[in-house]
Image (tube, rainbow, N blue to C red; front, side, top):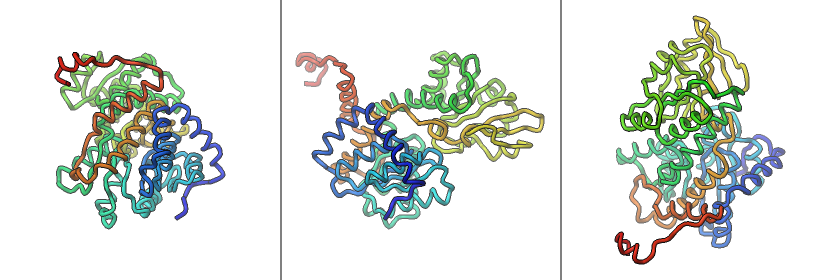
Length: 413
């Protein structure tokens, strides 16, 4: 089966992007050197469904170098970069993806990826797992297991598992200690504002930013907004996270109150209808809305359209909605994941850690699937520690080790 990409002539610039990120992914480079020699995935079919940009492409190449037959497709219609997709196909990886795929094309690409009969999957958002459990059940017997990258996908997995319907083991890389400390907090924190600032060309300083959701991603976005000089309001449903936001120095209030104050709104909850009709009614003219959750359901776009007298594209990735009273509200990147739909995603050094964990999760599934129940598992802590140790090694940082007496004192010997 041949790859399906937008234009193979774009491959050279895609190779440049991949080569650039490779220079700044030392942990994956160490794993690549090791796996290229041992080739533990020889002959195994691996399907990767993630945001198809340069860092994802390098992960796919590492898996290929480990001996796997790798197929890649996108997990979001607006995050695929056509030049990177072409370069990846040119590197011998099967690719089914292009930028701005419509719903039918997106679904078709997922099915074509599954046609390769994967044994191990890497999912981002849960679409692949959903298809396997609902439409492609004939492939379930081939699946050893897989891993999930993001909160939305983990929520879907845990729902399946709680219902007793999950048919193979999945590792929640999203819940790995290193992942939420670094990827979710520092990665989302920086890349979300990269996407917003690149798209709008406006300042953040002095504005009131409303952050919906104070999980690890929300913490990162709020922290970066504060660092950029914004006044930050947090909207939450969890009382523990809400008091944490208060102790971190932020105002906390319901979205209905925050709607009247905010200049920029960012949603990061993994839930739907976080900003909806009643909130649009209270927003000031010029308010900007962006979503950094996986699916484009956190800002209710249909209700925004219904409330508006007119709608038009005023700049790339910016839609203007004029309300009946003349107020203008702006939505970025169609309400899709703003850091990837309107930017390049998380910084390369951050994804080096996350994708090293993904590679190790694939190897863990390969070696341990027979002893794992059909459930959702966290990445084993020793793999977290290995990734962290490799990162420290790569930047020349050394840490202390316990003496035998110290180990005995705290019960480790």
